[in-house]
Amino acid sequence: MRVLIALTYYRPHISGLTIYVERLSRALAARGHYITVLTSQYSQSLPRREYLDGVEIVRVPVIMRISKGVIMPTIGLEATRLVLANDVINLHLPQFDASGIALRGRFFGRPVVLTYHSDLTLPPSFFHWVAGNAVNVSNHVAIRLADAVVTNTEGYAQHSPVLSRFLSKIHVIPTPVEMPEPTQESSEAFRSKFRLDSRGPIIGIVARLASEKGFEYLFEAMPYVIERFPGAYILHVGPREPVGEAAYARRLAPLIERHRDRYRYLGVVSWEELAAFYAICDVFVLPSVNSTESFGMVQVEAAICGTPSVASDLPGVREATRLTGMGLTATPRDSRALAKAICEVLSHPEAYTRQRGQIVKQFSPASIAARYELLFEHLLKTS
Image 1: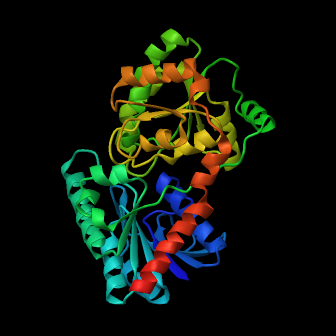
Image 2: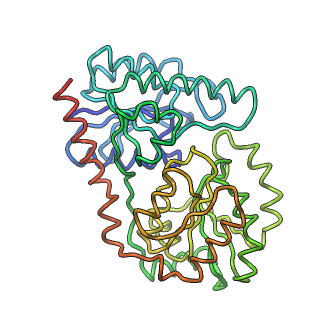
Image 3: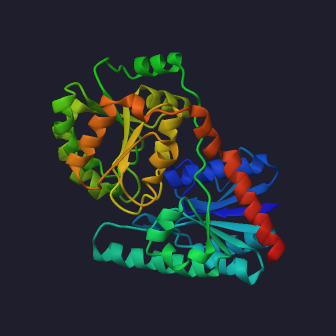
């Protein structure tokens, strides 16, 4: 089967969406399918065409950015060529170009499967209002044209103002998650590399420095946590300056400065180092604030490495701790509630720890790719 997968950003850009697509693409390729990823050449240093891990990557030149989106004048020509050359189209939303690609799929008789990662929420401004509405209109058109829509959880679909209108098209397929198994040696090497002291406990967060991640609520929760655990501090892994988030970074800077003795930024790390990072943390935190976060695969990554999480009680996001049994949820945008949940997990870690094997099996990319494969085959037979 030849599958065209389209999304705005792909690796080496780092986000939950790009990691999801990379894992899915590699797993489908490993099952014998020919996979092409159509994406943006968001940096001129990236090659227009590349072949990695059994996946062909086609990047379209960008002439300008609009907030987190990009304008690619030649994407229509590239999309037409690739839709004709493939059997199935898999679009990953939000994506401004999704409607045009979905229309080509419908016109040329190719089944279109949308993977809906999250609703689009941008900072308040007239410019973002215009950009957001343009993308939302494209998303709605693409969903109407699609043969099927994949989402992480049924709960998120029911609460999404977009997906709740198309429940008859919904297929629930979990997020693909994989992590190397951390060892005592890898954890010790990680501590040594980053010169981490033995104080604690460690509160971990893996996220872009983006407004939807709710960093400010974690910082505001720290005084309450420190009352119970005086040595507690935050370790942060991830890119510091994601596209379109400069204003948020400036707004957060005073909080970071105020908590500089309780906060350490480690940057982007390798997958092996990330597993060691999760393993040395006493609790992992995902204080997301809105429906831009639809699941939070980092919670599952942490669980695979033996670390429970505290996440926002949001549709979709709250499902990870329910499915893994490792952690608690807290009211979004409530620093005291977040602190209370963090302290509970730190006080009783054994109550929020489960066996690794079942979690690995449940979310393995191979298992997720097999479910996509069944959906693709069904649509090809019935189209």
